[in-house]
Length: 569
Image 1 (cartoon, one colour):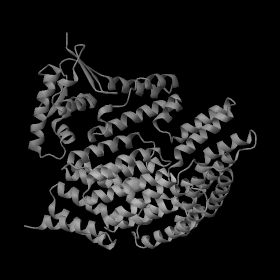
Image 2 (cartoon, helix red, strand yellow; image 1 turned 90 degrees about the vertical axis):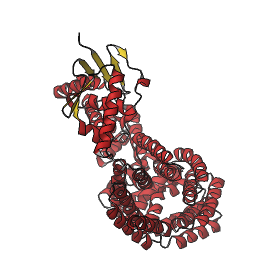
Image 3 (tube, helix red, strand yellow; image 1 turned 120 degrees about the vertical axis):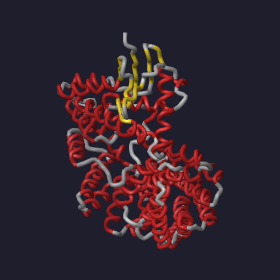
Image 4 (cartoon, helix red, strand yellow; image 1 turned 45 degrees about the vertical axis):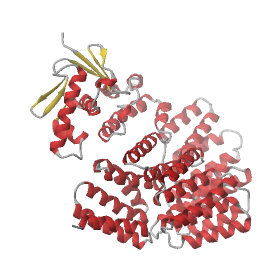
């Protein structure tokens, strides 16, 4: 009777040979298990040696990668208990060629394809039930597993859509608007109007932290139809309609209409003391003002109005990305100091601790970007103190995160990590975690005291990013740049490239400024890791010139030193 081998790759990786589990501790060499995984998910369970080498050791010379593969194959065969468990014919590797091989992924894909072809919702639901935990759950952050994971999950999503399993779709993606609309329609069809309204609110909450993103026109119309079939809408419901329609108008570049709807929502929110709606109205007003080039005036007006009233952190939170764009955008941070001191004077006259917290934050960030690290720490201390007095969670998280970066850049990494340990739970508990959490993760990479610590911080961030329903793009670019730099410095340009590509995508939406300069430096680090020293030197010089133009002396000197080191004797 042929020997049997059962491999499970949906969920956690396990192997059974002739019905007996292969213990996890048998995989002495981690890459031995990775070779088995790669072959298990490959078509026909076979791959060329070069394919395996390229996926598992992409940054190694061919000879070194080949030696590592031979070692991994030796340990894989020992773990599986058979010398022919992985056969090598020419350049082709085949898993379990002489026995019966059963891989759960094969069965899932066959069932999924047949169910989708049939168009039968019940059959699709049955096939979807066999999808347990995703492909290689413990390896989803490995570069070689990313593409197979996406393909399998796309098939699972297709099954859920065909089955009409909207709830499970929303577990995967809270912002799936088609799924939300389907649930709303189902509630309305069964007479459950309140549930339909709540479903819209769930969608709106999921989209709330996206800058410039809201329910589309079809969803808003469905919500309005639900409102008109019952008692007069509440102020919160009326504000929700105004905001949703305002975002639709903004998306169509009807700025006057968007501003009018935002101001309607703002009045409703102020009258009814609706904090979230007030923040959303401020966000929409900021979007319109940014599009018109009048953000500074709007922010100053809203800031002056806010500090005359009890603390409303939602207004400050709404302007976070736009304040960061002011510091990191095409003009750099020129003028930030005078603007920050103007805000500080306004807040001080009003006796507003929350206003002083935000003004000191802006001044501290200006000092940090200008290379005045001691002044940055002192000013951010003041911001933190004011934020603690007013109880503004997001302001406390931001002050700690920015102070941690200043401390890390002046060499006090232990103090930086202590600040970040305080900042991370505050970021999660804030009203804008999709902005703040990723920022903390980015500084954790900078504050690590070893290469292993940097890579560990990157893995932690990647896990959070994979599970987060949404992350603000501009706020995530700091992490992407830090991660790409650390990976390149670690000699793994292949791992750096996805982070660099994501940073380039985001920077393309926010042209110019220090982000662009930093990207030239990251490109240089990647070229240096690849051994292209002449190219790397030229890129470092380009980055130095751009940092100099933006008044970033620390970064300029760092890039010049790197270029000199590469071109020297």
